[in-house]
Length: 216
Ligand code: SAH
Image 1 (tube, rainbow, N blue to C red):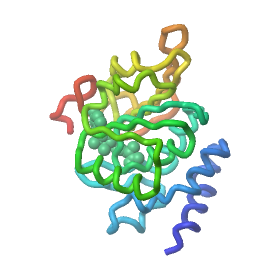
Image 2: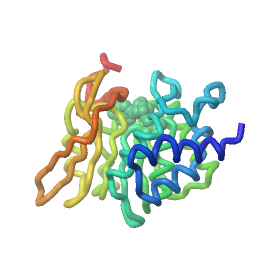
Image 3: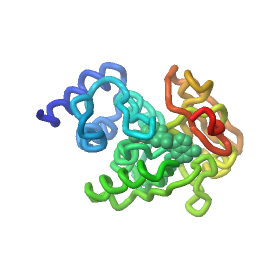
């Protein structure tokens, strides 16, 4: 299979027609080899227009949703970004193409290990991975210009709002465990402003400031 052709097709057929415009974002999607982040037996779906299982009952999000969340954050080369939910490591790689530093937290050690191995293989030196409850944030590395939560949350975890810089942006799927609204939050003069982006469905954020374990 020619993955480069599939990647170009993903950009032209799934991202551009739905309004993803940022050239740096589109170029990152052309560059990052998404299939390498997906279990070998599912690689023929790597560039398809839907989420794909990655183990531990978790999924890598549909390409368009990864692109939309990335574009909404309006990233620049100086940003320090926190990601909650490393999963496959694909979103972290996309972020690492666009910003200075990426900090990413995953609750399953198996997934974090696998993501770390592939990100090292690609030679990223600006990504740090930690195993733990991301709803607590990453105190030692805070504050962050941008925060991305890639699992569904019933609210905005308080530690994360505290670790977001003034004028910073945070994006997350906010709502019930089976359907959410992708929400962009901005911190302006210490207050949070909310903007609804679209409906979406993510796996649950499980942790102290997310859902309790029985939803996992
Ligand atoms: N960004 C990922 C998609 C991950 S799916 C990618 O590009 O592949 C959501 C991930 O969030 C899952 O791997 C899940 O285990 C993780 N997760 C859920 N709750 C978490 C928490 N409290 N802290 C860290 N990771 C969490």
